[in-house]
Image (cartoon, rainbow, N blue to C red):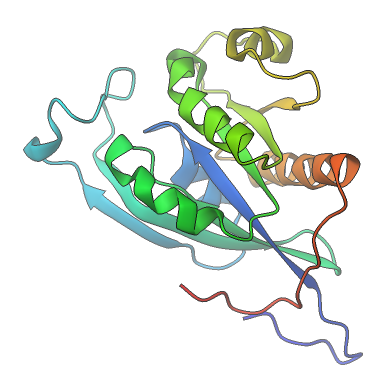
Length: 201
């Protein structure tokens, strides 16, 4: 809960979605940047997911998000972001519409080892006319790709920002979130925002 300051100033609450394919680093991102202990709905991968969950490229992954991740970060004295990480597997996509309600924008996290996995997220936000950017999660030991190369591969509109990041690094992710807020402000008048409060689930 964000407490009121002694001068009566209450920051504005902004809801941001963190989306992307299975195993791309959404839970890591929310955990790295949240100033509160993040809420996570992680479950251990079991044999029931064999043949359903594609673990190619993320063979070491042992858990998965089954509902959402939730975290909070204060950008400055005036803006507080509530972060909602979406589940990555196809069978949990029915939750996305509920999570997307009231969202100002979205970060589509991309892994160049499995770049096609973020196509459903890109398509989803394009259909809803939800502002988004693509954040390329740069892993150690993996060949780096330029933002322009990723833009061409995903066939993104010219105005969609593509940034490089490290989902484990708080400063890197804070820069991504600031870039998203700035992008939203350049393309449309933001909707009326309410004073920050603990969101309902």
